[in-house]
Length: 74
Image 1 (tube, one colour):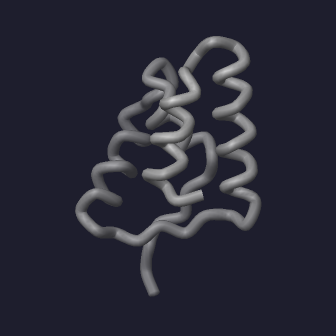
Image 2: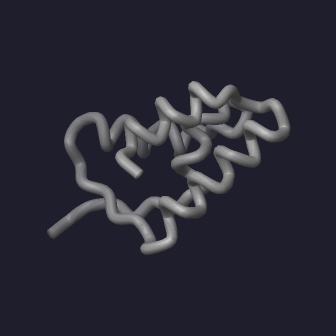
C-alpha cells in the first residue's frame, strides 16, 4: 500500500486560508487525484478540537466546521 501521511497541521491549512502553504495545497491536489492518505490515530480529535477553537475565536463559522467535518468524514 502506498500513500502519504498527513498530520493535522496540513489538513487544517485547507480550512484556514491564512495557514495555507504550497506544500499543504500540493497535498490536497494529490488527494484530489486519488492518492490515498494515512493519518495518525488521534487525527480526527485534533482536527475537530482545532475547528471548535477556531469557531470560538471567530476564525470560522459553525457551518464551516460542519462542512469540513462532513467532507473529511469524522
